[in-house]
Image 1 (cartoon, rainbow, N blue to C red):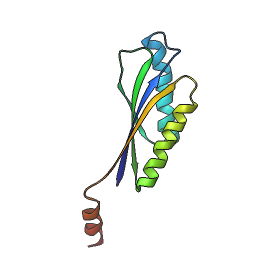
Image 2 (image 1 turned 90 degrees about the vertical axis):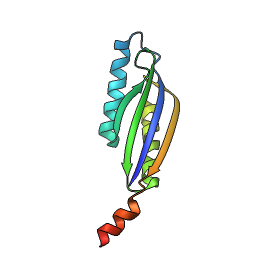
Image 3 (image 1 turned 120 degrees about the horizontal axis):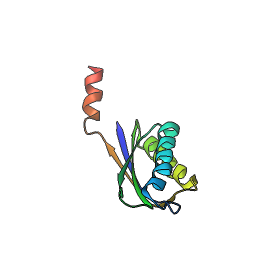
Image 4 (image 1 turned 60 degrees about the horizontal axis):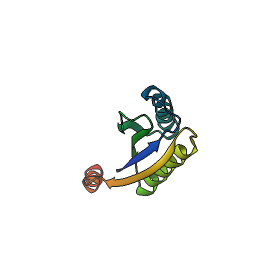
Length: 107
């Protein structure tokens, strides 16, 4: 199993309060969950009006697939006119037990 973590630093120029920030962040998070079948959480900048940090978790069967979905996440955020993507960090991790699971499954 491959897991990918995408951390997005976002700027919300139209937000003048935490309440103004909530709508675009919730909407974008829901769109990522529904369209790309990923897990999403706001993981930082909770007290700042015009900043948000989203963490996105991806599970895939291959590194290529995980990176493709990570790219789709970034592109989906880039298309949202309410947010500006300031930075993206992607980390891909392979389960250490994959070989053990494969052997156990065949036995």
